[in-house]
Every structure is written in C-alpha cells, then in structure tokens.
Image (cartoon, rainbow over all chains, first blue to last red; front, side, top):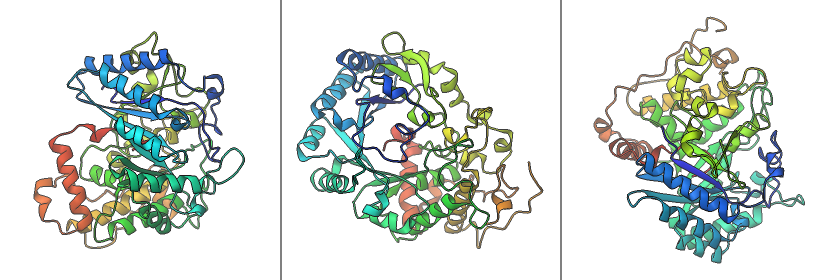
Length: 388
Length: 59
C-alpha cells in the first residue's frame, strides 16, 4: 500500500504555545535540533521524491499537506511555489490536492489571495467557536490566540469559502459539547473533526483514568455532540469522526485515523529532509516517529519497509488479543495508533480511550440501527463474563 | 453505562448487524442527515479516490 498523503513541514516553529501541544510540550524534543524551515534543496528533493512515488505506484490523486509548526510563518508565495513544484513534478494524470493546516492567527486577505492563486485550501485548528473554548491556545507570552484566530476564520469564510477546508477541534470533556458544536457552526465550516487529545496508557490524557461515577467522559462528550448533529433535521456540517463511524458500521472503508483497520498512508518530510512518521507518534516517546531515512538518500518506497510504517499497514494483526476478540474490532480498529502506547509493551494494547470508544461506537450504532429500522429500542446491556 | 460494560477488552454484546445493507437500497431512508451521509458513501464506493486519506491532523 503506497503513501497517498505527503505532509511537508514548511515551518518547524509555531507562533503559539498551546498548553496541551503534543509536539512542543510533549515527549519528543527533536524539533529543537532541526532548522526552522526547509531550504530549497529539501523542498526540491521532497517534490522529486513525491513525484517518483506517485509515478511508481500509478497514483491518480495525492494529498500534499503543508504543515508545521505553523505553516503560515512561511511566506505564502513560497508555499505556493512548493505546491507548484510538486504539481510540475508529478505525471500529467496525477492530481495534487493541496491544503495548509494553520492555527488561523496569521490569515490575512493577502495571504488568502496567494493561497487561492495556488489552489491551496485552508484547514484551521481551533477548539471551539468561543473564547472560553480556546483558553489553552495561547501565544508564547500566554496571551489568548482566540481574537486573531476568529478574525482569520471570518476572513476565510467571507473571502474564500471554496478554499475553506474546515476546522479541527480537540475535545475537552470539561466543555459543553453542544455549545462547542454550535459555536463551530457559527464559523461556517464545511467540515469539522473532533480529535481526542494525545495521550497513552503510560501518560494518560486529561481526565483519564476517569472516576467510576463518570467512567467515559470523552465518550459521553462525543455522544452528546453526535446527537446534536444527528437530530438537526439536516446535515449542517460534515463531521468526519461521526461520518466515518457510520461508514465503518456499514462495512465501508473509512477515511480517519481515529477508527478502523485501514492502512495508514501518510508520511512526513521534516524541515531537514528527514522522512518521518506522523507527529502524533511523538506523544509516545522521544524519537517515536523517526525512520532514519531522508529525501536526499532514500525513496518513499524504502520508508514503506520501515517496521513502524508496516505496523500501521498490518490491520488487526498489529492489535492486542483483547482487541482482536472484541465485537467492535472492525469499527474501532483499536482507535488511533499512538493512543495504544504503553512503556514496555509498545503499541500492542487497547487504546487508553477504549471505554470511551466503546461508548461512542455503540451509541452511533444504536442511532443508525433505529434509523434503518433495524432496532426499536435502547441497546440491550451485555452480560459480562469477567476480564478477558 | 457501567464500568463493567466499558472496560478494556470489550463486552460480549455484538453491534447491530448492518453489514448486509446495500447502499443503493437505502435511498428511501427518511433521515435527513443519514440521507446526505449515504449519498457521499455511495460516491465513495463507486469511485474510491482521495476519500480514503486518513491523516487526522488535516482536513
């Protein structure tokens, strides 16, 4: 299974210092030793390697994701030139879908115009549509990023709605899910996704392990948001997690890291040309994303052979026995890979979010079954025979 | 939901079996959100392309 998404770190620093950041405040400090931005040689070589891989595998479509750090710390004209370089390098039958994932604080009309000219769509990371939802998203002086981010999002929605890819929000179980969802709607995204904060069995995310009185805070949050979306009377916005859960329940392959057993097909080029696995792995341990390869000396095909990459193509074979015997296996898929990490046993464990994922998946399954005439009432409680 | 029903390793309760449903037969579903999701999934199954990009940290 070839790579299909190429994540280019176009800037290795960020103008924000979000308190929960898994990259700059997490287990991996590798960013300190890398250049702040890739030089022309790295970008040129990366473009050539992407084209080489796409041609070798006859790919009709690839995704080019401009990422960071904060990618808009780089001149958008330079970002546009990178995308143009990749488009020129691939074969005529290969379409390059380019996006930039930004915190939104540096969006200006001029920058949007440049991105539009180069057909680079814009995704924004924000944890809700109110200032109170974004208290953790501060700059290096501790000042809230919300005013600038809100301004950027309004500009995007008003000035270039066709280029507005949507909003990624990290779930905070301390917030009101319906309030978060509705506040995001007010920012007029075509799509949103709700992401669980990175953590694992050795370094649990906030709120886990949860008290017995409320054992599934993230699951409950997602269920409440789902119900608000599901019962709206029309689809107000695409919600990736919700829709991909529905896809999996219907036996259709899904487009998410959060659920499912599908092979993971993204790869990263760091600012120094290193080929790495995705940053979320860095929440596990120092060097977790490293492959030892780089675009100067190695092809992406060589990266496919890396054991860490191969493990994410192995489907259920890479899962713990308890996951493989779970009735939710083909929907859950063990959840997002880094969330299964435990010091000493690696990634072959249930997710730190296992109970929350069960809660969410069963809830969506029940709602879906009722809508399809397959279920008339609440999910029957299972008799539990004891620990696996 | 009790702790016992959500402990790691799963419960014995199977999910409702929806795998035998044919997307084309679901065109008469009367749920406005589900109708739109199903239309998108029909397109995905007819022509799978970028729909299966699964990197979470971008849209």
